[in-house]
Image 1 (cartoon, rainbow, N blue to C red):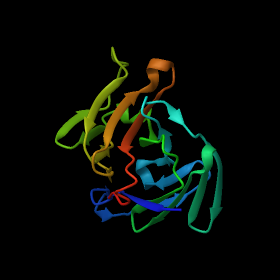
Image 2 (cartoon, one colour):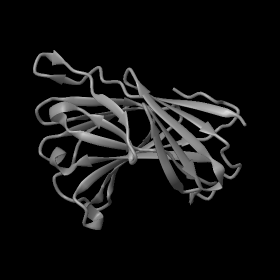
Image 3 (tube, rainbow, N blue to C red):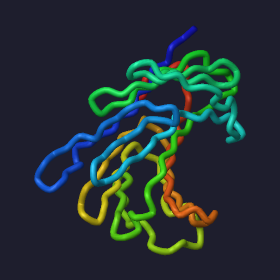
Length: 196
């Protein structure tokens, strides 16, 4: 049984409240990795979802067990992901991943309040969270490993995801759900067990 640790780093270097540098708290929960970012808000980064070669979701999550600072997530087909957080970094250890898995995805909801002057930066591209629902719900898609979200008051939260990730920001008002969503998809490569 091979263990494949993937590391997802959440860089909180730019997260400032007034003149005080504050680190966000990371904690595994039953739903995903909870991110408590003070006045910027609370977020949950879901545990990985597996995707096959046809871009379909496969091997759905069936159970999450919490033991101290580690979440053990069990999936249909026998796969297990152990998720932990330490020092602003999330570590994912993949075990017994079925051969039809070609990539994995994680998502996070972002409060619609970011429409009131909030902004985002993905790589070298910057933009604002849309005030109104656009013609298409996906307002930014890119390949890259960096994302920063910033409130109108200037507090920000920065993420570094594994190399070769595809990222997308979506306005879920398209489906009558007043929330933004960020997702990233990472190729699963059993021969390269670590991604940071």
